Amino acid sequence: MSKIYKDLKLKIEDDLATHLAWLEPNLGEFRVLKQSVDARARHAPHFIYSVEVTKQGEKLSEKAFSLEKISESKQKSVGPNSPIIVGTGPAGLFAALRLVERGIPCRIFERGSKSEERIKGINRFWRYGELDTKNNVCYGEGGAGLYSDGKLITRIKSEHIPYVMNRLVQFGAPAEIEWLSNPHVGSDKIRRVIPKLRSYLLENGCELHFDSQVTGLLYQDSLGSSGSKRIHGIRTIQGQSFFADHVILATGHSAEDMLNHLMENDVFVEGKSFAMGLRIEHPQKSINKIQYRDYAEHPKLGSANYKLAHHDHKTGLGVYSFCMCPGGYVLSSGTESGGIVCNGMSNFNRNSPFANAAIVVTIDHQKLFGADRMGGMKLRKQLETDAFLAVQKSGGTKELPVQSIKHFLDSKLDSESMTTSSPSGIRAVRLDQIVPKFMKEKLIEGLEAFDRNMKGFISADAKFYGIESRTSCPLRVTRDPATLQSVSHAGLFPCGEGAGYAGGITSAACDGIDCADQIFAEIK
Ligand SMILES: Cc1cc2nc3c(=O)[nH]c(=O)nc-3n(C[C@H](O)[C@H](O)[C@H](O)COP(=O)(O)OP(=O)(O)OC[C@H]3O[C@@H](n4cnc5c(N)ncnc54)[C@H](O)[C@@H]3O)c2cc1C
Image (cartoon, rainbow, N blue to C red; front, side):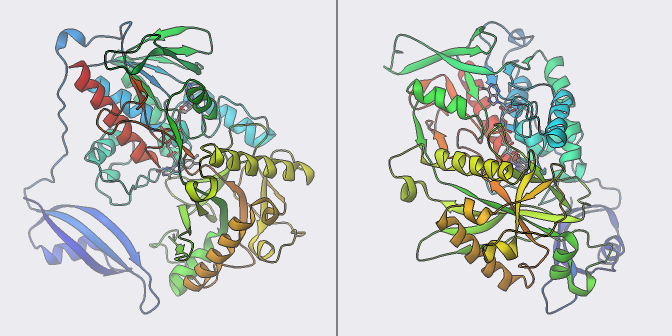
């Protein structure tokens, strides 16, 4: 039987194994469940651990997941009515994996290419500005998750989280994500997981169609027995039709063309609140200095992070940091040639000399757009286009638009050169003129509040990048909470972030699993 020690406080020089051996003279194995740094000003920084230990001769338990399957006779390969999955982000891939593990191979359609090809398209874009609309930071095998920062922490409560971590480890992610409370894989390691997962799906009878954008769903002419409409397949860009009773639509938050197609065909879609803003970047040294003070250079502390929020009780609007990437890079991550989007990522070691985080403002759909369900989408597009035009006007081509925090606050254009982590390069523009007035005011309010919390957060070497517009989808493809099918169209399982049911890698993967389990229950 293992035992858990919570909230063990250790000085940064102390050795955990030695401390545990002192606590448990009969110590067997141990693993760290949680490690955080308490760097509050009143004392020297120290680590806080939760640790699971065993006695000598005992082993720490391995997690095992056994799933009910459909009968052997049905398990070999896909057939003409096998489930279809659209999109190979975390939602689509985990839906496919779950179906396969339940004995139901499926057909998967992806608008972009295999990850190895996709990466070439991304590099061309960053280097030469040639956007490949099929293969970019959001599209292609692995979805937005492939080029993500790979933080796997989530706010959702789902029984599937241990399964997701276990399977990621099975396909090559670091073993520690199975037990750490704030797991991080890093972009470099996620990229190695995806081809292994692909091989597993293929070996187990799935069909994978790359470079096969799904341009529309197939709608049944007659109403079903319950009077509801049904979909019965998909159509691809090659003009081919594929039929299925179950279609999981996991196309991510950028696939506006698919959302337009759904609305044109009366699939029920509604506007939803989301968040939008800019991305801030500091030298990592400055963040380490603020958080760790005299210990900033201590080799055991690594790159410091932060999490900040400011809530205005009068308006109910919040401004907060999101997707903080210590030792990271700011990426140009758009999907359309006339718009600019930024996002952040880091590698497993988090060792770039920069720290970045989104600073976003709540976009309350009802308050801002009322009955206009496309309001959020229109605002997102407008800001991305304005950012693109500003870069062009400044003489740039492929660069990300930036403004120092100092000049964002005093409404001026930067004239001095700035350093950047971004592989696309940067151009100085007036971001304060691009974001709407309410957003600018909220961002300033937030910056001032954050600077009170973290003295030096507003500094001469901090800058904003534009536009952090794709934190989640401004629309929801509404589904029945029990069947997980569209409320207007049976057979359609809107899934993951693009459908409005996830906001990150782990939650998207869990949503894919839920949809797959629902299909399993129906087929069984
Ligand atoms: C740079 C970056 C960093 C991020 N960092 C983190 C992080 O650290 N932690 C975290 O939790 N989240 C992070 N995210 C967000 C996370 O990646 C997404 O929440 C997650 O990938 C959503 O999963 P999904 O499967 O719902 O959609 P996506 O991952 O967006 O996948 C959708 C897939 O559908 C495909 N597709 C779209 N339209 C079609 C079509 N018509 N036909 C066929 N295929 C189609 C796309 O090509 C894509 O592969 C980051 C995102 C980015 C861009």
